[in-house]
Image (cartoon, rainbow, N blue to C red; front, side, top):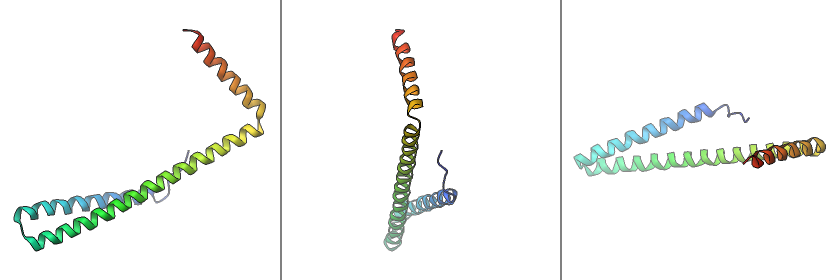
Length: 110
């Protein structure tokens, strides 16, 4: 099983904080819209857009990291399995045959 990175919790907390700030800014934007103050409105829009862009970039980066970590983990597990089969060919053949017999018996019971 793959280990979580040691800074996983810190990254998770940072993301939660980013989302909270984004939510607060959007709420301020909605409140400012009701007052219709154009300079205040443009400032809030700029802040909301900036925070939204930053949060999206962090989410995309985190998604890419998860994708690559998962791919690397699966690749290393496949390498381990391949190595085991090459080091123990008869055991692997026996396990495959046993699995085939079990599947055959289960299918034959219909």
